[in-house]
Image 1 (cartoon, helix red, strand yellow):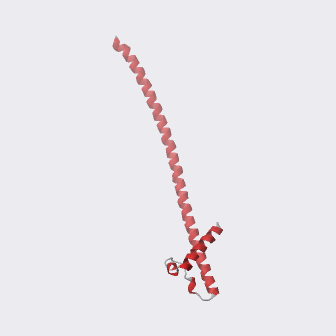
Image 2 (cartoon, rainbow, N blue to C red; image 1 turned 120 degrees about the vertical axis):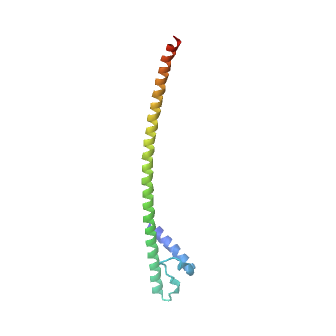
Length: 115
């Protein structure tokens, strides 16, 4: 996980280095190519890496919370579906019972009508 974050941060830094104007469009990132001293440039790059890691962590937390909420909704929907299936089964049984009672009543009514 950390390796993936570092790779992503490195890729983002490569993009920042390649297009210095684009770095200004991302709030929190600094243009490190303007620094002449190596220690200042290194510090700038480290600050950018830390910023990107924090942004990734924030996005991961938000994504996980959205995923958890979606899983809770899915579980609730499954519960509702199971309840609906049980209701449908009960209604089918009731309809079958009523149909058999109706058939019995019709069979009793036919001999009485013939007399």
